[in-house]
Length: 485
Image (tube, rainbow, N blue to C red; front, top):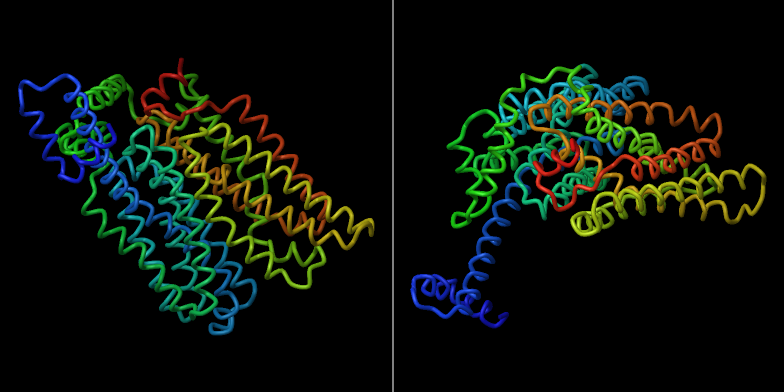
C-alpha cells in the first residue's frame, strides 16, 4: 500500500486519475486509488488552511511586538524625549486601555465587516500607531500612537483565534489556533531582543512589518465560510469552503452541516448583552470567562513583567540570566503545547499546565519564606529561579493558549461576536489588574504573593475538572450540540 502511494505521488497523481477513468478495475486497486485521492485532497486542504493561518497569525505577531516594545525602549525614550517616570508609565499602560476598547468593539466589528475586514482594520490602526510613535517629539503623539496600537491588538486578540477556528478542519483546529499564542510569544521575545541593538524609533518601524504582510496576505485567502453563511452569502460560502478543503474535495457534507446549523439560528435576533445570561448560553460564557479569569489571577502578567526584579529580590546579583532563560523557554514549550493540543486534548493540557503553575508559584513562595526566616539561604536563588521557570514553562504549554482556543470554539456563531468581546475584555481587565497590583502585593509580602498565586492555580485545576468540556476532534457545530444537550 505504501509503495503504491509513493509511486503515485512521484508520478504527480496521474496514475490515480487514469485508474479512476478505467471502468473495469479490480476492487483492491479501486481502494488504493481512493486512498490516494483522499491523501491528495488532504494535502490541498492543509495547504490553504496553513497559508490562511500563517497570514492571520501575523496579527498575533503584531500583538506580541506591541506588548514587547516598551521594556527595551524605556530608557532611550525617556532620555530622548525628556519624559518623567510618570509620563513613561502612561505610555506603557495606555496600550492596555486601547486594548480594552478594542476588545469591547471587536465582536461587533468582526460580525459586521467579516473576520478579514476586522484584521485589515486592526492592521491599519497598528500602522498608524507605530508611525505616530516613530514621529513623536513629545508625550502626546507618543501616547496617541501607543493607544492606537493597543486598540488594534485588542481586536486582533479576538478575531485571529476565531478566524483560525472557523476555517480549520476539526482534527487540526486546536494546534492551529495555538499558533496564535506561539506568535504572540515570538513577537514579544523578538521585540525584546531587537530592542537591545536597535534605536527605539527603528524598533517602532519594525512593528509595521507584520501588518504589511497581513494586509497583503489577506488578498490571497478566503473569508471564514461560517461568517459568510451567517450573513447569507451562500455562493461565496461554498467557494470559500471549497478553496479551504481543496478543489477536488467533496465538501457537501460539511457544507450541509454548517448550513443546517446556521438555518437553526435564523429565528434568533441579534444578541444583546443580557442574552449571554440565558440558560442556553450561560454554560459557554461561564467556561470562557472562567478560564480567562483563572489565566490572569494565576499571576502571569505580574510574574512575567517583573521577573528580573523577582530574581534580584531572591538574592541573585543580577536578574539577567534568569530573564533570558525565561524568554527563551516560552517559544519551544508553546510549540510542544501546539503539537499536543489535538493529540492529548484541551482538558489534560489545562490540568497539567495549572498543576505546574501551582508548583512553580509554591516553590518561589517557599524560596522567599526561607529567605525571610534566614534558612538555607544558599538555596533561595536556585529555588526562586526554578520556580519561576517551572511556572512559565507550565503556563506556556496550556494555560497560555488553551483558553483562547476554547473561547473560539464554544460560542454559537450568532452570539460569538458579543460573547467574544466580553471574554477578551475580561482577559485585558485581568491583565491590567494583576500587573498594576503586583508591586503592591510584593511590598506587602513576597512570600504571600506567590502563595496567593499558587492557591489561584490550585483552584484552576478544580475549575477545569468540574466545568470545562473536552472539544478535541469535534466540529464547531458538534461542540454546540454537546454543550447545550
